[in-house]
Image 1: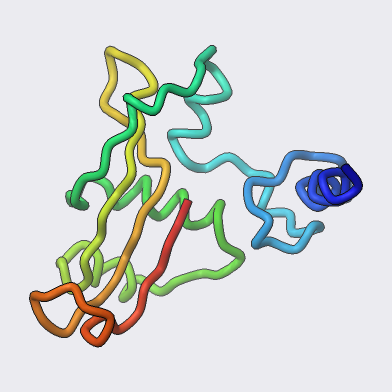
Image 2 (image 1 turned 90 degrees about the vertical axis):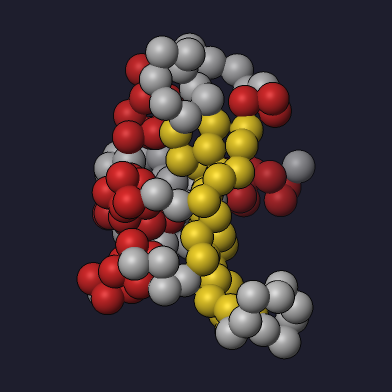
Length: 134
């Protein structure tokens, strides 16, 4: 119970605003700004979680803008354009987790795994680095 209270405290900034990510320092202003489409939709929509609406799929070029927005919300780091060009040019493998929030709209991105591998096999020796978002 005490641990949960402490966790909730870290989720709030000094102005008692919701923070998107515990990766950010508590007073980090950028952590309370909604940038990603998924969070704008969540604020406007009544919904309940259904695991059947989850899917994994490969990155597509039209995902880049949302992926960048989510990255700004999730991490207190600014990755260079080179990083995003690697994603867009498939220099790294990017697998997205999506959720079908609204029936009349495409699924929204809720997570991503980005990694670089040195061959076509998925062994631990061939994975150079892994980023997990979400």
